[in-house]
Image 1 (spheres, helix red, strand yellow):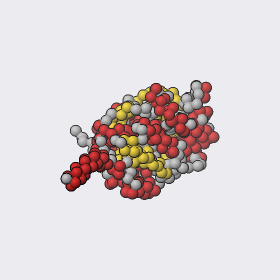
Image 2 (tube, helix red, strand yellow):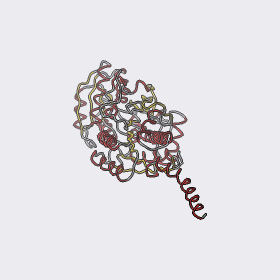
Image 3 (cartoon, helix red, strand yellow):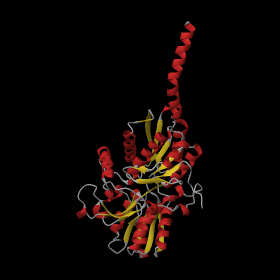
Image 4 (cartoon, helix red, strand yellow):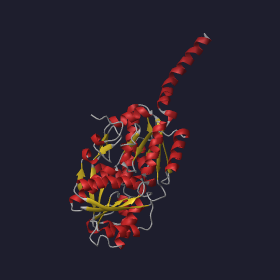
Length: 405
């Protein structure tokens, strides 16, 4: 009799433990772990940086800090814009710390390195801060996603618009690494297709302090448009020093090919006014964008750029995909990311087979100081670029995941 009671008790305990064990199996390690890996101390620290970590936390908080009954853990690190440093951190996170997904990944060389490693480890990466369109073309992977913008979208917006406005001749100041090269290439293609011409280019090292020799070459070129194929403090330094050389006063126009709200804020409206740029998000666009911006500003005391808002969207979309898949298993989550529509404070759109999040982009002009109605009121939206036009057509894609018909 005692043996029967003991057997029944054991069976009941096993039955109660089974659902918990099953849930544990569905969420690896009993926790969903996300890593934000970006530049937190260099030229892109304001562009993304620690503020992107806060944006990710907002997305996690909206889920109550749990998914499928399991805790969501967020970690972050500074990759110093070095692919080897980023790869070592990512490898440690994947192999030893149980990280399921890495996001942000400012700097194209870093993003390409981590995306390659993520493919090897069968882990998901969601690039927000890096721009090169190579990520979803030649270097596309089943587990890699590109979220906020890319060099094609930037070139399509700013390059195409300025040629239409009469800026037919171009000279490029280009950051000398993958991102700058790709942005110059993509913009040059739009300029020439629209009937313009590229009269020259010069490349500068990342985190350049003195742009004088480069700006003198741009000035001597007599190009109508000087295209800044750089980002972060490289862009703000170039714009400030261009003012000292009287480039705009001399009749040339500066085109910031990757400028976000953070760079405009650093420049101030007096120096930034009139700049034409392309963004994937503006905080004062609609009620939903303003609602997210309010949450973000309460934490950071600054308005979000498309990098921070894009990081929020990427993390939120990842968590929704985990929830829909009922597991954090990479293949299942990657499939759900491509299946589920995205509709949040950052943007509304869809994720394509090549990993591109296809959404509207916005051509904007920086306001004059007299036009601004208050803090962070910096942009006039000139044009909405429809999602289907903003990104590389799949028919032209070099991604091996795209089946050509």
